[in-house]
Image 1 (cartoon, one colour):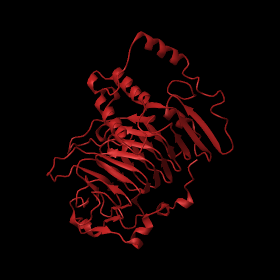
Image 2: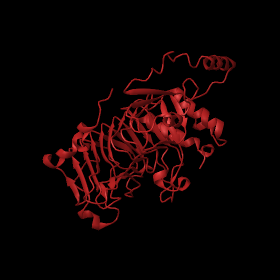
Image 3: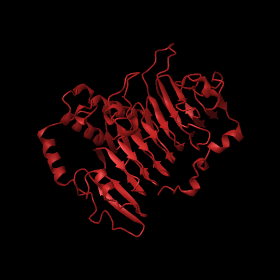
Image 4: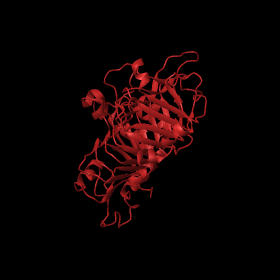
Length: 392
């Protein structure tokens, strides 16, 4: 699937979700305008009424735009990026040509193989329409955006177009010690209908150990965030999707994150389920993996499960998390395989909100006591003291 066919309505839906968020910054008008301008250029099916910002096109504004373009690099300091040191390097990416690189992938490609240095790929505000791969040979890379509502990497592959869900990610990280700060990862493939085959569309696949995400956004619908394998930390992030939108077999700690369901609204009185937050892929009791969500919030639309057992030893815990009433009373699903009820570990601890009532939870759901919850409540769950650096 190619970008020219991307429906503009997808951009509107993705940005509308962020705009509706009250605990995180909202997209600035320039960010939205960039999306609009891209869509106007490449899509012949844009409906003007869907555009949330009015674009003035007077002679005066044309003149002003031209002047701005002539001075577009004026905000860059003459000595940026600074020279390399023994321990760090900074590569600058700007889609308007104000840096040495205009694409994120070209900057990644320029990093030396197996470098022990921390390389920061500083990415200016804007939307970068490209598919990015960080291979195993490029450890210790940081993607530094200018705000998750200002900088985004966007593509639109699906399981069908990329020969499998695992390969559909707009960004795919296989290297160790990857860090991302203040940037969004988006997959803008068409919204799938229930039961669509091959419509899974990943925004990012994280398959390297010791990865950390600070203040990032993850935008998609089905299978947004592929938390594939390795130890990962997510702090102050916004994660959006509809079906299994956090899935994989990583061992990950989500702290102060907002989880937003984009599943279709369900009429009052209808009990059907049309979404799920997690699909954890722990396949045996020997695998030291699972997801822990602490001090997070869950809202949005639909009638959803907290998780479903993609693999028979699926492990997910929610603690101190606010859950809106979109969560179905039973809470979880065993992937319609009762044999998994004996091996899955789904736990809840001290959660609040209309969806946190556990009185009707299924029998295999754990209502954790203090001792049972303790291993999942802090970053020791991912051995953070051995590798996680403080945010700087």
